[in-house]
Amino acid sequence: MFKSKKNEFNSWLSSRIRRASTGDILNFDTGERVEVETARSEVFLDHT
Figure 1 (cartoon, rainbow, N blue to C red):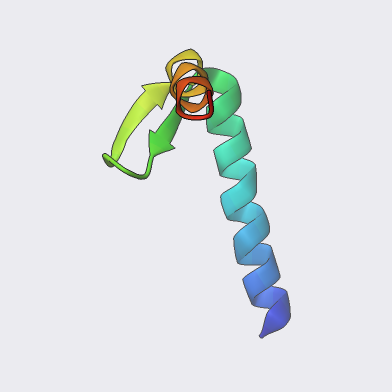
Figure 2 (figure 1 turned 90 degrees about the vertical axis):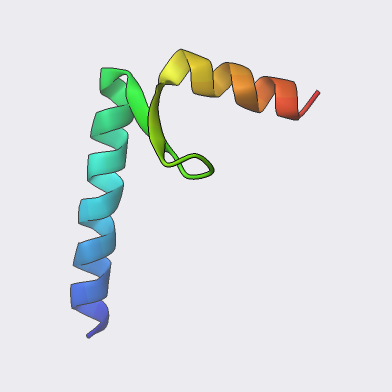
């Protein structure tokens, strides 16, 4: 069971990294895709 969950997580993480490297990621708050630069700006503003 743990092995299947680990493989599922690794697959999910790989797809997130792949999408982030192509320029868009999912914003979990709004449910929409945003560009990486926009997401970085929002995180920076939230933490300053």
